[in-house]
Image 1 (spheres, rainbow, N blue to C red):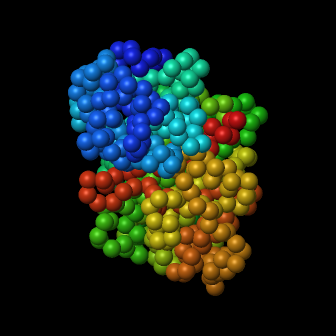
Image 2 (image 1 turned 45 degrees about the vertical axis):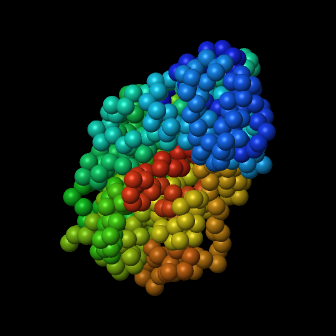
Image 3 (image 1 turned 90 degrees about the vertical axis):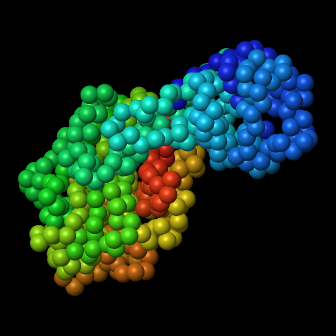
Length: 493
């Protein structure tokens, strides 16, 4: 979709399609009331005869509406006015996008920025609208090319220049986030025989051709020299060589310490010797969604030209069963020098992330956030709505929570108490890689915290939010690119 902002009057020419929102109420107010008056009560008549009630996700199309300079008037329901929050607004915007696509219109004038949304200014509404509409019509493209469906030109109508300036900024930011989300979704949706660690490395190299991002790729011999025994132990069972991908975006001053984003890049996870069940194993191509979100966040930051230094680190590997693969009971030595007893080879994400966190120290970061589809336990705890979050610094945790609330890409903080650390005790190494069945998401965070003692660190577990399972909805979501983008925007401020 192509978005623009224009200053207009409701009585002016609207083009092929005019779009408004309406609350679930008998008395039409605000812009809906204004449009109703222009059409001689055409909208109110639909309410009175029961054709339209303004319920959430309900739509109404009026052809050749009298008194309105457009071919079609599309009305979307918000639901009850006392329940209209940002989530409901985004739902309405997504409904509009799907309806416009099904109507096969080429352009539309959308009058939804003037509607009241709790705790949401003009710029924020424009950003949410752009993100929600684009997300609703996303289509996976296996070859990276645009689909044959034509773009829809969407003009966001406002009533004065100040509103236009605010909305324009929101459109720019929303479009930048969409660029990052779409990249993350497309990378994650690729089959694992295409999206290998080497493929991800090539994508990182490709980013520097379009954006001011410098990329470096470390191969297995280089990682071995650094002592990354934990990361390299995971890739031993695969014919695909592991890669450590480093991407640096330098939008701030040279003296500014960077924000470091670390993304788990398991391009396929069969569980290793601790083999996963066959059902839904195809979805383990999504075990690199943490990496995809780092690619997406860097893209969004570069699109917005944020005055911030950002480093993306992606440890990438496959986890497969093989004669060379990790075995339960093996002990490996991490880059930090700490030894790890591998009790379960399917707890491999933390094994590649711990070496990446140690590597992050060299950048003297102001903050480090790792993102990973880390534990099924997080899905049990929080389902598919919120990502799990832990941190060794409460101020950083509050920033992440606030960014999640603003972007509606929300997280829920889990405790990182010392009480849980003893579950990782090992008789044969400094620590075990699992802490037993209890509090699995938390003990995974505890494991990673042992490699993040020298900087402010946050951990986001996206196992329940990174993709949707089954049926027509199956596919990557692009989370947590919106949260990370908002976090970076706020860091600039």
